[in-house]
Length: 377
Ligand SMILES: *Cc1c(COP(=O)(O)O)cnc(C)c1O
Image (tube, rainbow, N blue to C red):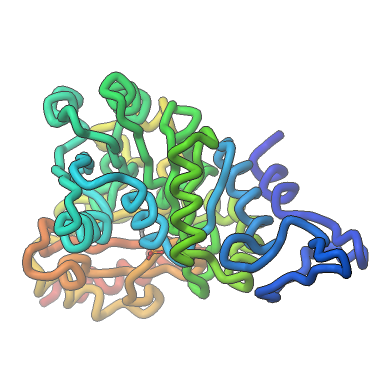
C-alpha cells in the first residue's frame, strides 16, 4: 500500500455505535464498570490508556512500520521518557548537529541524575565507533539534522550500535515517514515531535516514540509514560490524527517549493551558503538517495555578513513569518542563534526556513525583495 493510502486507512475507524466516518473524540478520563464490576473494554482511566490516544498510537506504529507507538504531550516529553528508561551510569551518544533541546535534557536533567553522554559528528563512522563505550546504551541520531541539514547513514550507525549492544534511536521529525522510515534501516526506535509535520498546522504540541519491537525496553518506556502521565491529551491526539491524513500531500508540496526556494537562494550574490539536501552540491548526495524519498521541506541559509545582516534581511520579509518551530502550512523563518543563546554553535548569519504551502513564486518574490534591500544597504 502506498504511504498516502496507509495514512488515511491508519487514521480511519468508522464508529460502530453511530456509523460516524470521523473517529469520535473520547474526552472521558474514566470508564464505568457493570453490576459485576466488569469493564466494557480494556479502558480504565485515561492516564494509562484512552481510546483516542490509542487510535493515534496505532496509526503512528503503522506509518513507521513499528510494533508499538506511544503518544506523548510533546516531543521533549517523548525524549525525556526514553532517557528515564535508562539507568544511572548508562551512556548516550548524540550527534553534534541536533535539536538543541535533546542535549539540554541530557545536560540539565539527566547528567545530575547519573546518565553520561557525549557528542560526535556522526557523518564520521570511525569517530562514532571510537566514541562508543562499554556502557553506551543509546545512539541518538537526527537526520536531516537541525539546523545544518546534515545526513547520517542510519544503516551503518544502527549496525555499530547493535555490535556494541546499544540501541539506535532516530529523531525523524524533519524527514517524516513520508521521506524516511528509520525502522526499515534497522533503527530500533523512531522519535517525533508530532507538533511539526505530523500535526502540520502549528496548533498542537505532541511527541511520539515508535518501537520496532514491543520488547522489554519498550514496555519499560510505556510503564514510565503511564506512571508519570507524560501522555497526549485526547483532543491533541485527535488533531494529530487529522493532520496525518494530509501528511503525504503536504510534505510533497512543501518539499517542491523548498527545492525552488533553495535553488533561488543558491548563487544569489547576498547569500554565502544554502544548506539543503536537494541541491546537487550537498555533500551527502549518495546517502540521501539511499535512505530518503526526497530532500525534505526544511532549509537553512547563511547570508553574507553576520547576525546584523541576517536580522536586517528577515526584518524586511512580508510573507515569511518570523517565528520558531516548523512543519506547519505557513512558511516560517528564524534566526536560530538568537533562540539558542550565547553558547550556540549555530553560525550567526544562519536563518532556518520551514517552507509552507504558499505558492513558490510568492515566497521567492518575498525573499528577492528582502535580499535586494540588503545588497542596497
Ligand atoms: C521541535 C523538535 C523537537 C522537540 O519537540 P517539542 O514538540 O517542541 O517538544 C525535537 N526534535 C526536533 C528535530 C524538533 O524539530
